[in-house]
Length: 287
Ligand code: ADP
Image 1 (cartoon, protein in one colour):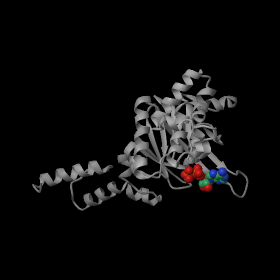
Image 2 (cartoon, protein in one colour; image 1 turned 90 degrees about the horizontal axis):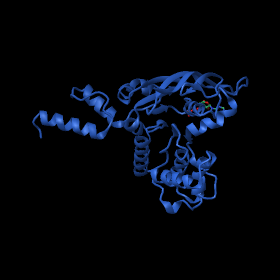
Image 3 (cartoon, helix red, strand yellow; image 1 turned 180 degrees about the vertical axis):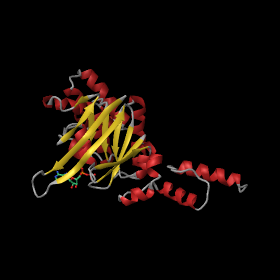
């Protein structure tokens, strides 16, 4: 069943001024409950504007966002409630942290939801654990945390509200490769248990290839493609024409395929590439 349906969404900044800029143009799509959608596109292609329309931070000029079949703007006075259902972690989580302690920050959402102190405590600890924040950090000021810990705290603050849809804007930007892998696998573990719907914006094609069920590609405000990672990343020329790249390993394996090696299309991981190379070498009696 589709949880989010977007119909002909349009948004223009600075309408009627010389700085007018159409950021999202006639975008429609439908997302099933539990899907992980990877969102890619060149800087300025409209990704942030689009995701901010999913939870009502930006009101579209025209078009609709339906959450479980209901237009999120059907009652503008209730738009804040949508933010409990569609949780958003911004690109710069430091802007999302504001309280004296990490604990208070994470408990802000559940407290606003009206949970009891005991329930709040349980939810805060569980959310912190999900993102790998140790208990001893909970009483510290969020401003004393490292960049990676701040991001974890911001994610914990959003998942503590138990949103049906989680939107992550560049969650791994600025992290080192190990930190990136760990955070991604924690997000995926959370997804496996909670089975919620996730939109993840990323410049890392490797990350997207690894976790997305479908990849949506935005270009100049429009939805250019939406399909499985395998199908999207097979279209190297089209993506490169939009200033995007494909995972390095996909590119290498496709160029080898073009030279006559029998590899599958759209290989997305080093592990898969390794296993195909080994199979080929075995077939040729070289190992
Ligand atoms: P992305 O997230 O893909 O980088 P954005 O949604 O941030 O894209 O931006 C889409 C377009 O809208 C860009 O041309 C950008 O310059 C413009 N834009 C974004 N935010 C604003 C704003 N607050 N005022 C005016 N133009 C904006």
